[in-house]
Image (cartoon, rainbow, N blue to C red; front, side, top):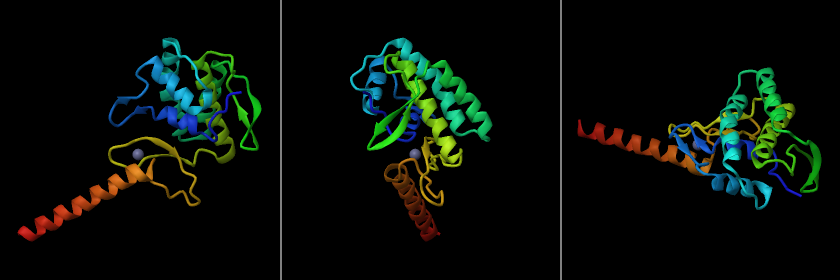
Length: 184
Ligand SMILES: [Zn+2]
């Protein structure tokens, strides 16, 4: 039995396999997609180019839906995506809790990934609306993340990476300003 990532992790990670800011593609081969699936609990799977094309064609829609202005728009788009991916929704046990899985474990990998990603985003919207979806505040990153902090104060997709980088950037800018000021 495949164990999918909890929450919307698979959906968010999938959206972020394309770096919007740098124009960098992480899913650059069918093998890369199989590795992605394996890292997200699908076990050892093989991926075809059709799977890769399906996932990559849907990915911008997943991003758009998570950042949509209103829930009805996001839900309509995600319902369509879910329906297009031959889902098989069912409850599965994960870490002692029951959670919905959406993919048909016997289906094509591309459809499984799309079904699971769309289903996860729908579930997040059902539970929390769109308010927790956010994009990274870094000037060199536009990754999407789910802000689970209590007062929605999280700014960076990965505080350790993007947060640190921004802090260093601000530090260098202050240093440069002080150096400029000193030379006057
Ligand atoms: Zn970031």
